[in-house]
Figure 1 (cartoon, rainbow, N blue to C red):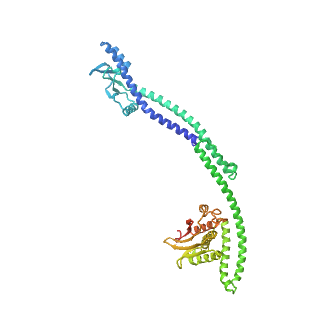
Figure 2: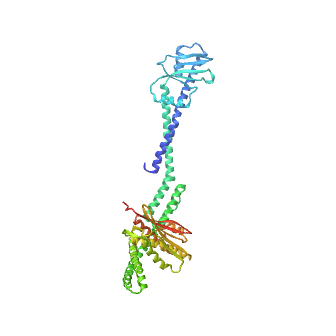
Figure 3: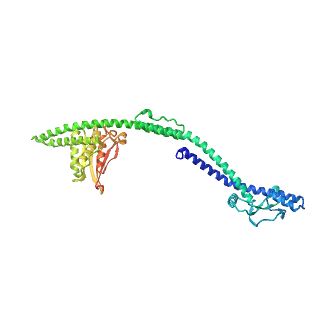
Length: 460
């Protein structure tokens, strides 16, 4: 109960109402003390009127008048003359004097609290203005015990009333909160639990019905999340099925390419100069295709082989990539160039780095050829104190917004029409395996630039 929202709200409401009542209680008790003393002054003034009417009254009558007024003596100043109107012996000396004519709120509150906290009975002098302008001032002496007793009685009644109001108010708010907030929140939680039991069942998507704005916004946000999650789960199932199919195809294709690799070994023995020149490139392409099939099988198992790091001469690797791509350019007006310092070396897995650079250059080539316009692709490299950098720049049409949004997401970041988006996803994963990063530097109508960062450190 206490850990629930409504239970805590009930407790907080009670506490806050009590605090508000206490803030009201303090000035109220000060006001009660002032009215009590004013009442004693008025009763003393009425008692003194008997003496004004008859100068000669016996001591018994005087004592009775003072007792009824609740004071020991009464002094009335009229026409600048101070007169002791009524008096009886005082049990002790006067402890303090209070002038009600110029008492400010802070002073009255302070005096009231001090009197409430002091249980000792004392004699005090009280000065005030007579009612109906019956003189300049009236002064009385009285005991503090009756005043404190009256203040305590008044305070207890105020606190009891405050407690009753607090409990009643808290109970009403408790009922209101349960109806307005707790019940709808429990409904949302129930929807979430039912949806979690079967997240692919579209019938369990919440229908916003709350009247409270904030709760309705929460329901709408939950509905949007559930809808997106159902789509993601369905896509995940399709991708899992597709991944299984790709793995099977890659397995069979690897066997076919392995057989083709055996035939190319025989082709290398040909004495034809053209065959001798082209055979190594054919062998290299088939070898990379076999490696790609094996990597695809590894990707289907949600793992990519760890890179075998070694010293790589980058200009030779890039030259192989560009030579392979030039065969696919054909008669298109497309220039492939590189700007790599001579004998530029770095530490990487040569096969994985070849796949990454080849993928980026191939994507650029396909994008430029699709425009039927002239273009240029350039691969450059440089290094700084901490990293090796490789940049692949092209003058193509730039990446569409959708491709930029999911650029490195498998099956979503396809750049070309009909593309799967696996190429960039795998490339990014391979570079991350090196401890580096593949990033899109810029793209637009004037072209696109990708950068590959490979760290020089060992990551320790």
